[in-house]
Length: 275
Length: 305
Image (tube, rainbow over all chains, first blue to last red; front, side, top):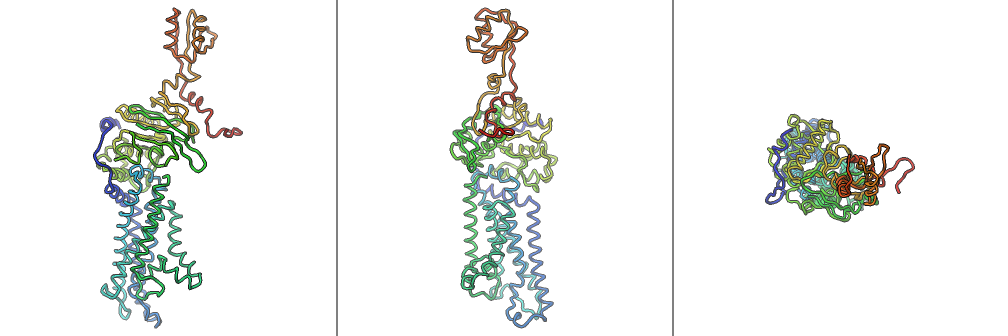
C-alpha cells in the first residue's frame, strides 16, 4: 500500500488517438465471460433445449402406434426435432434483458458509461457481442436438436435429413430466430431497465399477445397474428404453413425490423436519459 | 482542472442544483461540502457526463466529459460504492473497464496492489465488505493513471486505518499535480485533507475558498490579544472595523481581522503586545454557520422556507 507514489506517474499525460469500438467490444466479451451465471445460462439453455427436442422425438417414436391417422399425415419430423427451441427463446430472452438490466441493478452502468461516454458505442458493442453469442448458441441448439431428434425418430416414424426439402432452411432459420429474439430482449432491457419488468414484457410479447389476438374476430386476428414473433417462429420450423402467415424469409426480415426498432429506441433513450 | 459554469439540474419539478459555478484547481485537494441532499452527488454526476444538465456546462481540462479521447486516462472517479456486479471478480471488473480504454493488463495488477486487494483479486466482489468495495472503486479510478480524480464520500465504510490510508493516498495524488475533487460529510476528515473547499447548500454555491481563509473568516474565529495598552489598542482596532470583546482576565478577543493585521497595527501605534493568539473555528463550526440557512430538511415544524 505504500507503493502509491512509486507506481503513479506524474500527471498530466497525453495519448494519441482515442478509445475505439474495438476496446469496448473486448470489454463486453469480458463482461459476458466473467459472470458465471451467464455462462451457466448459456450451457443450461443448450442442454435443456436439446434435451427437450430429444425427449419429444423419442416419445413420438415410442408412442407412434397410438398416434391417430390425421396426426400421422400432418406429422412434421423437422418441427418435432426443433421443439426445444420453443424453450430456448425464453432463456435467450432473459439473458438478453440481463445483458443491460444487470448493469442498472448493480450500478455497473455508471462505471461503464464513465469508461465509454459515447453511449451508442456501448450499446453497439453489446449488440455485436451478445448478437454473435446468441447466433452461435442458437445455431448450436438448432443443429444439435435436429440431428439428435432425427436420430431418435425411428421408423416407422418419418424422419428427415438436412437435405430434406426445407430442412436446412428450418434449422438455420431457427438459430437466426433465437438470435433476433435475443436482440429484441436486449432492446427491451435497455428501454425498461428493470429486469423483472423487461422479462415480463418479453414473455407477454411471445405468449400473452398471441392469446389476446386469438380472442379477436378471426378476420382481424388472421391479419394481425402473422406479425407476431410467435407466428414467425412457428412458420420457420413448419413444413405446413398457416395460409395467413408470412413465409419464413419474410418473417425473419420482419423480426429483424422489430429488433432494429427496439434497439433504435433503446439507443435513443440510452443517449438521452440520465444514467 | 474542473470547471462548472452556471449549472442547473432539475429532476422533474425538483431543482437539485441551481446556477452553480466553481472551479477545481490541480495540485491540491478540493473538498466538496454540503448538507445531505444539497446537490453534491448530482454535481459530480453531471461532471462525469452521467446526468445531463438543464443549463450550464461542466468541463474537464476545457472539454466536456463526453468529448474526452481517453476518458479513463483523463478522469478517474468513485461515485458510488459497490457499483460492481456481485458475481464478477475484482480482477475481471477492473479488466473489463481497462479494455475499453486500451489500458494494459499489467495495470490491473498494479492498481490491485495499490489498494491492497491483490490477495482477494480472484474472489467474487459480492463477498466484499463495504470497505473492500470502496477500495475496489478507488482501484478502478486509478486504472488510467488520470490527472483528474473525483471521489464521492471515499472514506465511507472504512475503518480508522483505511481512512488514514485514503487521506494519504489522495493528498499524495494531489502533490503529484493532479486535480482532486473530494466530497465528504466527515468535516474532521475534510479539515485534514482539503486545501480548498467548495461549499454548497440547496444546490447553490455558498462559498469557494482556500480552507485557511474559510476558517479565519468565520464569525467564530477570533484572535486573543493581551497588551499593557489594551484600551487604546481596542479602540484603534474598532476604528479599523474589527469587533472586540473584553474578557474577564483583561485580554480582548478580536474578530474580523487576522493576527498579522493586528500585530502590524499595534507596531505602527507603538503599542506593546504580550499575546497574539489566533483561535480558528473548527471546519464543523464554519460549516454549520454557512449552511444553517440552507439545510434541506429542518426538524419538526421547521419546514423549508
